[in-house]
Amino acid sequence: MRALRGRIGRLLRATPILAEAHAGVRAWQTRSDYRDLVRRYAGRPDTLPALPACELGHPPRVLFIGTDEEQDRSGFIQALERCSQLTLFRHESGRYGHNDPRAPEVRRAANARQLDATLDAMAAAGGLPQIVIAQTWATLIDPAAFDRARARGCMVINIAMDDRHQFRGRRESCGWSGTLALIGHIDLALTAAPECVAWYQAEGCPALYFPEASDPDIFHPRPELPRIHDVSFIGGRYGIREQIVRTLRRAGVKVSAWGNGWEGGRIDVPGMARVFAQSRVILGVGTIGHCRDFYALKLRDFDAPMTGSCYLTHDNPDLRSLYDVGREIVTYRSTDDCVDQVRALLADPGRADLIGAAGRARALRDHTWNSRFSALFNAIGGGVG
Picture 1 (tube, helix red, strand yellow):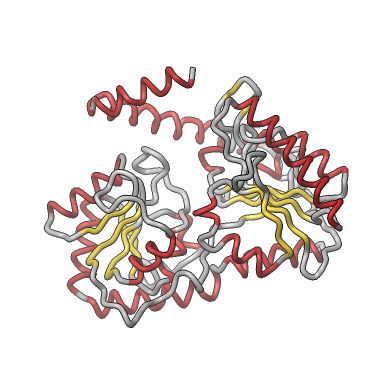
Picture 2: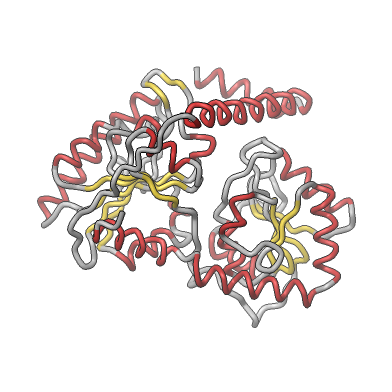
């Protein structure tokens, strides 16, 4: 089946008309699944389960089960290292995290065994973690492993950055692939989609809104360097992203782009921080997958403003509770609006600089990974409901 999917993928990439049609179908399915979940939970009572509490050490002992090491080391792991006594989960092969290309039933079992073995090793070395933090889905690890961790006295917390479109996930041989299948096996869910807090709570799982954040030690202004990029974009080249960049370039705007498929190629975290700091305008694209009007928070919504450069992204409603839109960041509602906004910002560098400075001040005040984890540990350590 995986080989067949690979052949279909190659065929689609080689046939633009088919690729566009396929993207449209996928976007429709994503929105349809979301609407189904909204209807499912609209009439269900919000049970408001109590926030779990435990006695934490100073600092607490934490085991983190990650996915993408480069992304996780863009500030997430560094903050956990500052706020806790941290151990990183490693795959049975010794590599970071629990990504595994094998079939779902194989990787689920392998990662569950590895979690058991990791906890055994930590216990033998002097102490089990007080908290196991995972960034996972049911397709990556058998949730029964979390039951065994909890039976040993560990609190299990899952962080979900993609709940808006991955809450239920796909139907696989082992069941639903998303985070819904973890409920009943974890103590607390952290979600970057505010409406999903109620979805978890309706299922009896305590949950907190936990948007992404940034690290000011990595992402910060570089006044000693010139702003050599009129507009920069970092992210994979597909769908509406490609259309927006192409439209800007056709309008005469110089856009420097990095990521899979772009001329700049992939870029590491230090390079990304440098590009952002040397940009007059940082372009964000807030859409989910191949959708054109369905949004989710992105890491760059926090990393970009943290550098002090002017950030322009889609008008995602989630951003309005996190920034003063128009003063700390700027948003656009369509591709044409994006072109107009970029032209206005480049024509008025003083305004762009003021927005960039205000965005950094807000990010420093409210959106650091340190503050996210400090608030989390204070809440569960003190049993705050």
